[in-house]
Length: 177
Length: 177
Length: 177
Image 1: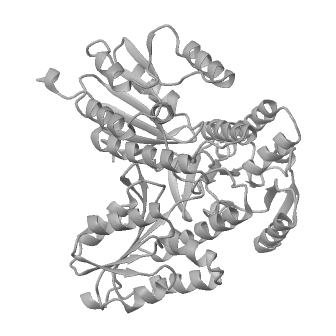
Image 2: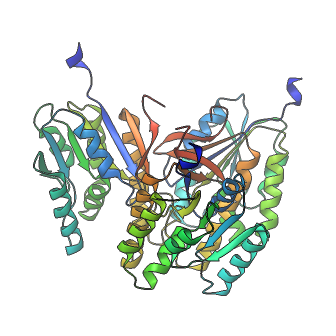
Image 3: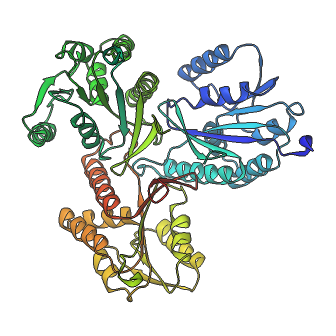
């Protein structure tokens, strides 16, 4: 029966300014609404506050925005039944969890379990941050390790993994791969 | 009629030492000459002067070299009618434009329009710089943002986008994708 | 005749925490043993010593481990006839060679020749480090250049090149590409 199938989940990876958010939004818009936008950004400075406000304005009023800088698994689970959820983005969420000195491994495990046992379509945006020189400082190295491991674990439980390159989707995992 | 078709344009992306220039030159050499090489590098130190001279020597005398550290759209437009143009590379050009305190958005828009309305075959080389940790300093972040957005906009108007990985071309957009 | 065919070689590229080692080990385990693990890591601090010990424990007793922080070509050539060799990883080896003030070009040339004329199956792991912003310091830039060039030269002489993205293999060169 159609309604017992597990809802699809997509992981949209990419570098800075690679068109991740735009592609992820297009994936959600292709599904029936209403759509939930889970924002993980915290406006810690003016540069970021401005970017958040601009993005919300660009999305338009059809989206219901939930702010979840840290309680991400809860935000996904408590969203209205069946509504597609866009999480933008996991990298900022991980930053917030680390800066708050939370148990990163426990938080990641809870998120991966929530995604694996999803009851609604999910589109997750995350940065690929591991393709550069080893960072000088230990915190950046730890962040890079956590981000890479989280991406791997999520990639294993979603249906489609896309790597964005210059605004274009490259399928890494999916029906056409 | 054949001569009214829009000439092809290729965007060759890649990391440092990924074989971008070599692949781009091969794309141009596969077309009938003469070939125009638009160099955007400025020899600001000995390391770079040496690299520029070596590259020019390696290309050989069949290439007509035009230096365009900043006036790139003009260099593309004023090249001899029909001659294929290789631009190497957009990332250095963007650096030059930013360091000269020009209007980056206006310069990028002019370049994208020139590429979109091309009257000759174009092969553009650019670095993919967004797959690392967020840089510490604000200028590097701004540069990364501009570079990513420019790559996206150019990718949208060219016929083929290639990501070079260890000297090998990975097609992101093109006839075989 | 089957036994005169050149043994296969694979190059597994990827960013930090992209699942390179796991994928490379799976490639070797799919071949008949015994398996040789050539470790290039030197335990220069506690963080790294811990990681090395954990990895060796996770591999299990079926692997014969050879430590080759610098004499890598020799380690590959003197391994038991026919036994598949996993080298993890080339990026650490290159770091060691540079820090020891060896002739980097000569060392890379010897390694590329050893791989090209291989008498046993090889799986080589290397980091892709060139997709970020140009590093501030000159040593990191030189390292990035050497790493990129080495990856290109090895990619040219192996049978398969894989780019790992979030734990998933993307074929850059190989039978299916």
